[in-house]
Image 1 (cartoon, rainbow, N blue to C red):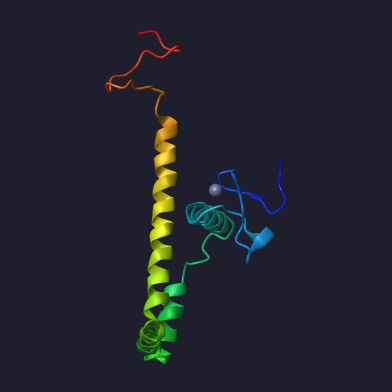
Image 2 (image 1 turned 180 degrees about the vertical axis):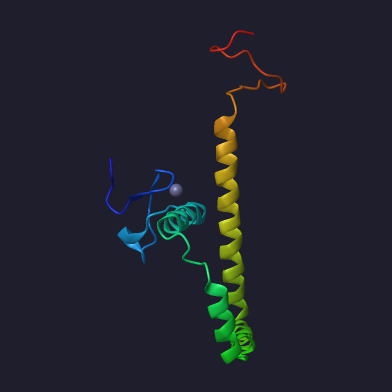
Length: 135
Ligand SMILES: [Zn+2]
């Protein structure tokens, strides 16, 4: 049953409480599911628009020739952005990245666990005789 304030993940199908800032617009439960949805969306785009990226390099090359300092400026601004952040903000950013990495690992571990056969282990560490399995 769908509870108020919960969404169903459009990637893995699990129910989740969306971020209050995103609400009903949030489609995926985690960064890992969001990444999967994004790569599927990119794949659909590439299938619908074959050749979209073809011939782009010449255009980019010409634009870069007209704006030779663009990248240097971009790097300088970006470096300034990091210098403006407080230690706490940098820590929060690193912490968010660490949580994303853990969530990805948990997803992979769950997939591996789902593929493993059920093997109860007794207290000695040996495989116990399972009722559904002949020894
Ligand atoms: Zn999900």
